[in-house]
Image 1 (cartoon, one colour):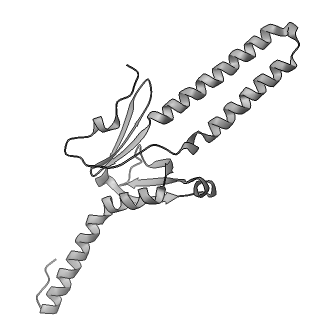
Image 2 (spheres, one colour; image 1 turned 60 degrees about the horizontal axis):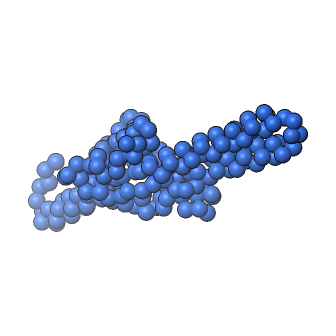
Image 3 (cartoon, one colour; image 1 turned 45 degrees about the vertical axis):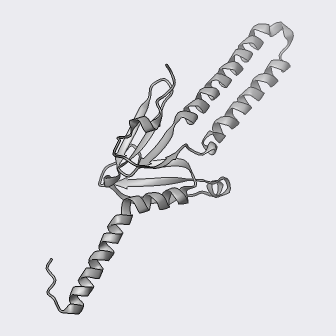
Length: 186
């Protein structure tokens, strides 16, 4: 009932899946740090309080339980979020209770960039920036992407590869016509 659909279920029969990836585990690093710190504070304050303040201690333990539940929900959200790239579009599915599907056609991509911080190089993640024709799309900035170089190379080949081959072919045909002395139209 609450299990999200598999992202492949949103793909058309005519689409070929090229990449399917989940964000890097470092996406959860700050949330993990916050959770551990808040739990440590709750436990420490609870043990420092005198036994006569049992109501405050109970509130602290319930607060600690709430912190754990919120963190578990964030982990589940991270686990179900998927980025799928096909030969026709980007599809990002997310959400545990309410499923959200963001999509951008590959044909709208005009520029592709990836960034890696020092932490990203150390742990193996980066950010890919996908720019489209004059619009801010839902998928313009994809952060905490594992192996961003491979992703960048794959998407570049998918988006710009055929165009590059076509321009090389056109340049070669143009050069052959010039060598033969034929007039070039267009």
